Structures are given as structure tokens and as C-alpha cells.
Image (cartoon, rainbow, N blue to C red):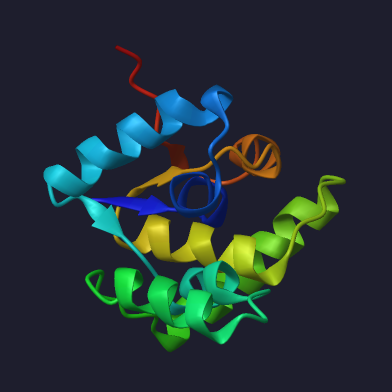
Length: 135
């Protein structure tokens, strides 16, 4: 399984930019292989910013096909520890990012993202980033 971060979902649902085509194709392969993982915090980020209720509902319906991976209490504690480790090493990040890292580590998942912050986290945390497969 691969925990897919918000930017990849955004490319797939919101972008017509040809620069993102390889990311979208790789994402589609993961969907076909039934390897996409999603947590509630990412679902919330994807759905945020839609003032048009029809577009919100349409996207919510598309996302309904993806079940949330369960976040447990230990993930929040691990996320705080990861934040502290990174901060100690001069790397700042968001609570959601560190929660993604914690869930991915617990479930031994790769993280699929284009968020450069994760490359900085990877220097200090035991996370594995999904490598884009280009045709």
C-alpha cells in the first residue's frame, strides 16, 4: 500500500496541467492495483477550499471509493515525536505531515507526494517515499 498525499490527489482531481501527467498516470496505476491508502486528515485537506457545494459533493463522492486507513492514538504520539526530532534538526513541518509519516511508518507504507518537505523529513525519519514510475 502507498499513502497518497494531498498534492497527488489535487493533480488528479483539479489539474489539467501536462506537467503533472506522469504523477497522475502513476497514481492511476496505484488505483488499478488497489494500492492507494488514504487517511482522514488527507481527505479533509483534499475537500477543503470548495465553496461551490456541487463541486464539493462531486469530489466527496469520488473520494468515497477510498476507505480511510485507521489512525490510532499511538500515531499521534509518534507524529509528535517525529516533529520533535525534525525540529531538533532544524526541519519544520505541519502536524498533518508528521501524522502521515507516523501512519506510514507504522503500516510500512511508502508515501507518494511531491511535497519537498518530505524529502527533508526523510533525512531524519524512517519514512520511505514512493518513487514516480515514468513510462
